[in-house]
Image (tube, rainbow, N blue to C red; front, top):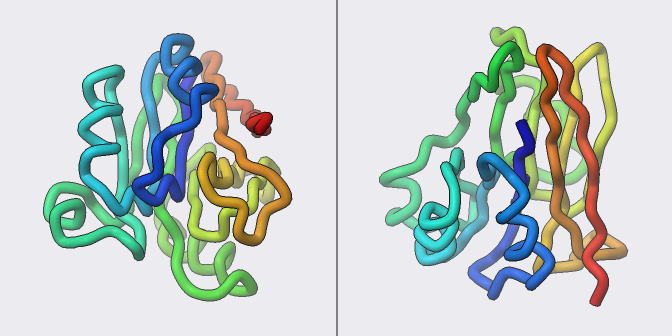
Length: 160
C-alpha cells in the first residue's frame, strides 16, 4: 500500500507535483491545517482520505474531522494528529496523545519541518508543508509505503 501524506496546506492551491502523485497512491492522509474545506473535498474526489483537523482549521472542518485518529492499514497501525504547541514540545505532545496505543507510526504536522525517523520502534513522520516554507528550507509532502507489517516513509522535496 502506498499513501500520500499531506499537512499544513493552508488553503493554498496544491502543487502540480502533489496532484500528479495522487495517481500513484492508494489513499491519502492529511494531518490538518487545511484552513479550507474545499481542499478536503477535492482530495476526497480523488482517493480515500483519512484526516484530522489542525489548529488553523475552522468549525466546518472540526465538525467533521477528529482531533486525532488511529488508522489500520493491514497489519500496520498509524496514529494521525496535527500537533500543537511550540516546536520544543511538539514531539512530546504528539507522543502523549498516543501513549495508550500500540502503533507502528505516528504522522503529524504543525511545525512544517519534515521528519522521517524511527524512535523507540515507532516511525515518527511529518511530511512538512507543500505550500509554506515557514520553519523549513523546502516545500514537501510524504509517501508511506506499507508491505505486510513493515512501514517506510519518504519525504519528497517539491522543486519550485
